[in-house]
Length: 301
Image 1: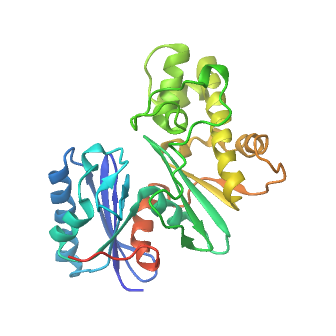
Image 2 (image 1 turned 90 degrees about the vertical axis):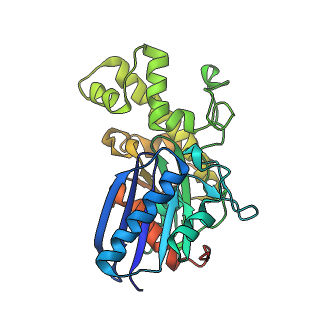
């Protein structure tokens, strides 16, 4: 396994890393994500040029993006970084870099990075500004632009006050993303208790004993349990790994497995739910690992 470059294109940051044959980070850098398409292409090209200057040219580049590339049109679709949508990002990036790349959804990269050797089926769930997922089976990433995309299914078994649901950026209402992303958590607190607060501030308030924040956290766990139960009913994962900002909320891990089992068809489901091993470095690690995945063919200039 030769040296390869991983790139994690996020809504707020771009991270690039060179990773050696033992999986060790040799070099890495992060910058803020530009808010426009051309600026993003230039930023990634500049980061790659910086690594080339330090380490020599590396032709194996994998990138995770917050959306999917249509294999029919070559255009990005369903990206919450909306300036990417409808643009031939993969083609334009290859032309700018002058070398082949492998592109996948960022949640796929996260799942690939977090799947441990010997685990059968792993579902990686991103709970950040948005909500996405990826599936790894026996070390192989499940290919396909729609694979693992649970965040834009409706929230299962909605209560009376959840039936219509919030409007989602995708144009639908009541998507799982609008409830269990960090953004959705903050929106729910605001809708039920008034005032504007970030997800981090609400969690801090819950830890200090604020009743409204504790209630919001309870609602969050219950909704996340319903959403994950749908995944369990379809793929019966051996492990569910949570990523994104909400995965840093330690309080959700103890009650979540039992809450999920209340909603699955087989209450004997024995899978684990755990925090990520590599934190916010998982995306860039998984992007580099795309070169080990036959389901994602490299595209050339």
